[in-house]
Structures are given as C-alpha cells and as structure tokens.
Length: 250
Picture (cartoon, rainbow, N blue to C red):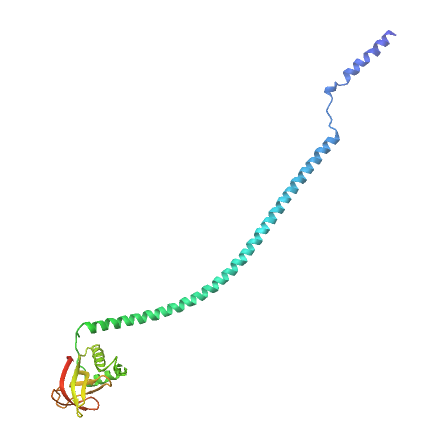
C-alpha cells in the first residue's frame, strides 16, 4: 500500500516535467488583431489612392482652366494678328505708293538740280565755247523756244524781260545773243521805245523780236543806225532812231 501511494504522489512532478513552463509556451496572436492590421492597411491604401485621385483631379481642373485661358488668349492674339496683318498690307501699299512718288520726285529733283546747275553757269559765267548758228538753226530754235508764249504784262513782263529771257535761253546753245534798245518816234511823231535781240549768224547780223520769233536784217547788212529811219519788227514799222543802245553786246 505504501508503494502505491508513493507512485501517486510522484505523478504531478512527472506531469510538471512534461508540460512546459508558461514563458516557454509559443505566443499565438489572436485572429482579430491580424484583421485589424489588414483593415488599417486597406484604409491607408484607399486614403492614399483617394488623395492621389484628388490631386490628379485638381491638377486636371487647374490645367484645363489654364488651357482654356490660353485658348482664349490665343484666339484674341490670332484676331489681333489678323488685324495687324491687314494693317500691314494697307501700310505696305501706302509705303509702295509713297516710294514710287519719292522715286518720281527724286528723279524730278535730279533733273531740276541739273537744270539749276546749268542755269547757274549761264547766269554767272561767260560762254566757254561760242557757236555761230545758221539761219535754219536759228529759225528752228525759235520755233521750239517758249519765250514767245508768255503773255505781255505791262506791270510785270514787258519787252525788256522778253529780251533778257531769250538771250539767256540762247546761251544754253552757246550762242551769243545780244539785247538792244531803240528810242525815237514813228512817222506820226509818236514816241517809240522798244527792246529786242540781235545775233550774229553764219549769214550775218539778224535782229529778233522775242515776242513773236520774227527775225530780220537790213539790206545793207549794217546794224540799226541813229538819226535815220529804220524799218523795225514784223510790221516793218518805220522808226526814226534817235538813240540805239546795245544793253548786251553780241
């Protein structure tokens, strides 16, 4: 009997040796805690995704607004460009017209400057190479010259002015054409004074009336003489010459 009791008493000790201590037992997580972590992870992922979608949506909205503003600006700039293009075409046409006028005026200026230079030499310098015209050359030149087309004006343009102008025009041809002045009276003893031109041709002295281009000579070939009757002008008016003056010699 004693032996059996002893065996029964030894069983707990043996069981203790078989069962591990509490700190030696494996730790087992409860299933609920693992689910919580999964849910939190999913929520975080969803939150990040939603945040990303929100940011993308905002960026899309912002870019769309900027695009619309740029599109509006482009439309306005395009309209302004078209308007400027039309203005450019108009201004270019005006420029071309003005440039053509400038070229015409510049050409006229060059011609006028050349004429001015020629006239300056005529008025201020003697004839360098004098030429003597023929009767035919004189007649042709007088028909082309425009001095006789000027209207006589007693206050502003009289016989002396005609004579000076024709003389200067002749200088352009290198012709030495003089100016003469006659004082006297006609057959009715009416006072007479007149200025006209004189030139030496290859056929001798010729007098020229600048107001009608008529030219003549005396049968003896001599110039007008004082204190005698002289037939003057187209009408061959008989004038008794008291004074004959060469204002510009020939």
